[in-house]
Length: 225
Image (cartoon, rainbow, N blue to C red):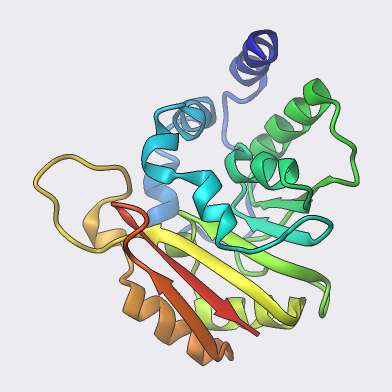
């Protein structure tokens, strides 16, 4: 694993020095994030200390049994959740607007000898998940909801892309003040869980489960078709 990590790091440092091309405009959250280089973002996303507050395995467990199911990871970035979902037996669509993050995942896939059908790379525009009707069993979007403009029509497309009974899981940062420095974007860029639920209702989702206790800095919303 150390050899793989070193190889990936060298790959990032050599080819991910400039942002990828994007479709559509960037909102303030996107502009804020891309003040950092892609290699810096990848190091931040993959930092082992993230596991402490992100609790990825426990988050994934909330999606239920995913073995053999197709899950889209919107805003997959460096693949922090993508590879963990694949380890659980899911067929994962790693969807991102950034070419360089897609290259990062492709390199890691190659190093880990992961089949192309288990992790599928998908470049998407800012304004659409580009999902075919009823094509996925689940969608997960972690730390990315606040990056999306025109969220009601966007997540209406997500709803259409889910099979009947499918679930959308949104994990994003709580809009509350803390006494100490915490992970996440500036407070003015965060979106409350109440607003997320309201927007998803407008998109057509009807059933919701909200967990604001598992993670210290984030809420988890499961919305059902």
